[in-house]
Each structure stands twice: as structure tokens, then as C-alpha cells.
Amino acid sequence: MATILIVEDEPELVKILRSYLEAAGYTVVTASRGDQGLSLWERQRPDLVLLDLNLPGMDGLDVARAIRRKDETPIIMVTARVEEADRLIGLELGADDYLTKPYSPREVVARVRAVLRRAGATRAATAVLRLADLTIDLDAHLVERDGTRIELTPTEFNLLAAMADQPGRVFNRLQLLEAVQGTAYEGYERTIDAHIKNLRAKLEVDPKEPRYIETVFGVGYRMRKD
Ligand code: CA
Image (cartoon, rainbow, N blue to C red; front, side, top):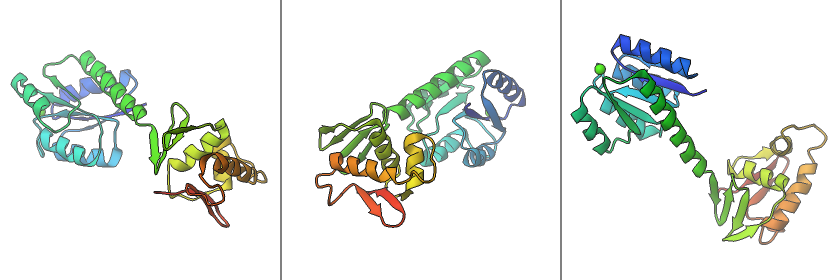
């Protein structure tokens, strides 16, 4: 379940929000000062930040900017003043949504859910890996080289996806076996070599001079970075 960081200096509000969000199944961490909120964000990397605008220690806007410089964590800004709300969405600080006080805790839970869903959808939409002239669509299980579709078996696809997801990383055969089968038994590692051979035959322009999948002698295989 997702972790929500609440940065809010009114203890009563924190109490209410915490109970509603926890009842909705979220894990909640809290900070009552802006600077503490930022360091808690650094340590915990929550899935969403519910951030009050007027905070002691560090202004909510500055906290949001500091987070944005480092990561795309969804942020919902909370403000007591309606006129400020318009300013917030106009600002390029990248808040994903805002709430004005007073709000109903139910509304907060609904917004949190909606923003998390949107953030998840964005991540899913970017599940396409591009390496040199290869395009690997992880959701649709499609592979194209230079715009031409390449037909792979599910095993070959999973093998390619595992390596392409971390280009440059060397995988040993046992790790690759686990990536394609979910389990790995010692003694069967060499079956990977057969899959790699088939994969290269389909993927590489010249399978004898592989450009994408490199053999790392004595260890295993890796996807080239460029
Ligand atoms: Ca406040």
C-alpha cells in the first residue's frame, strides 16, 4: 500500500487526516515543520505528499520546489486561502492538485486516490524502453527494430526485457533464468544460452556480431547501453 507524507502544523488536522487515510489503507508519516517534512521525504520517499502551504521552518512552496528538483513524487498542496489556490496552480512548482481549507477528510482521501491513480497511469504509459534503434513496449510485449516489428516468444521477450530494463548490467545465467521463469534451478543455466542464441537470431542484424546483447565471458550477458 502507498505511503502518504502529511506536512501540516495543526495537530488536530494531522490527527483527523491520519485516521481517515489509515482507514483507507494508506501508511501515514507526518511532519509538523517544512524542513522536517523535506528531510522525512528524503528518508522515506513516500508515494504522495500532502503539503500545507504555510509552515514553520520552511515554506510549503519551497518544500515543493525542493522535492520537484529531485523527484516526481505527487504533491497535493493545501492552503487556507482560496485566492492563493489560483496562484498555486499557476506556479510552475508542479503540484499535482490542491485543496483549500476547510476541507472534508473524505475529500482529501478521494483526491489522494485520484492523484495516485493518475501518477500510476503516467508511469504505465512510459513503460516503453528505447535502446539505440530498438523499441521495447513492456505492456504490449512488442519489439521493433528501426520501426520493423520483431516476433519473439514470451521467454525471449522476458529475457530481453529483463536485460533492457537495466542496460549495462551484467546478468549471470541463473539470474536470467529466474527473470524468464520466475524460478531458477542450478544445472539448468545453460538453457539460457539457447534462448540468447534464438533471441540474437531474431534481433541482431548480424547474430555473429551482436550489437545489442553482449556476452561477458565467464559471467553471462548484458544489454549494451548505446
Ligand atoms: Ca499551516
